[in-house]
Structure formats: structure tokens, C-alpha cells
Amino acid sequence: MATHSFRRILELFDSYGVEYVVVGGVAAVLQGAPVTTFDIATLVKVDDANAGRLIAVLDALEARYREHSALQPTLQDLKKGGHLLLMTNSGPLDVLGFIGGGKRYEDLTDSVTTLKVGDLSVPVLDIEFLIEDKRALGRDKDLAIVRVLEAVLRRRG
Image (cartoon, rainbow, N blue to C red; front, side, top):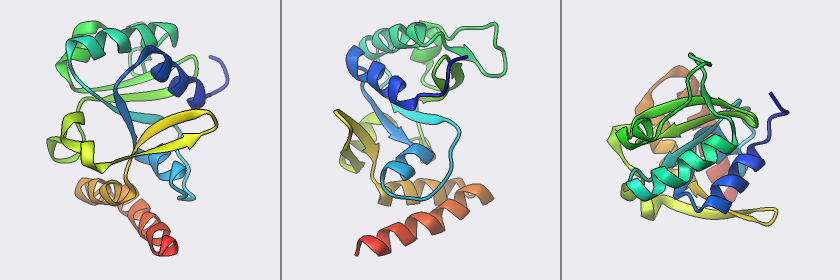
């Protein structure tokens, strides 16, 4: 595997026109939270056109399932709208069809902000909704990040 490059993943999503939002730890980092994350999690629009674009990206990334490295994700897998936990030639990638409470891409249009990352415009889940999502998950690791995200919000004023 190549050196992890979340930027390359984002560049490919952008160049292929994938409709997505960065969620999870990378969304937190991009909004100023001092947290560590090992994968990039994306919430994707689940429809035929976007699935076609996304499968092309996953092919370019040589994506394989993390638990079953001999298996590649298929177009049918993407259309199911579940969670695909993948390893790519640019690092770990989670492709999610929904997040907390069953919210899908279309449900979050008012909870997304676009951030500049170099010359890329990256759609990212707002920190307020990220807090809500992490709190709803309720896992210890998510609740620890909630406290950090709340501190970032307070610091913003």
C-alpha cells in the first residue's frame, strides 16, 4: 500500500464528481479539533449515478474490504446504502450510506459546510451536527471526542 493520502481520496472524489460529505474524525480535524484519526469517513449520496461515479473512484484507489482483502466493493454493494469499510492505496476509507439515526446524505444538506483544503473545496459535516451524531452513537471514544468538539465551539465564540 502507498503512503496514506486522504487528500488523494478527496481529489478523486472531486474529479469524478462524487456527491459526498466528510464525516467523523477527519471532519473534526478539518474544523480545528486536535484529534487523531486513522481513516476518512464519507457519507455518500446513494443513487445510481453517484454509485457509478463512486465505483470508478474505488477502482482507481484499488479499494478492498478491510476484513476481506480479496474482495472488491461492487456497484450493488454501493447501491445497498450500508457501510463499506475499505482499505485503499491511499489509506483506509469508510463509505457510509447513512449516519446516526439513519440520516442519509439528502437529510443533511443544511448541516454541511464547505471548507478549503488547499485548492480543494471539501464538503464537511458541521461541527454542531458532528457533536450530535457522536453523542447519539454513545460509545466511549465518541463521547470523548464530543468534549473536544464542544471545546472547539467554545473557542470559536
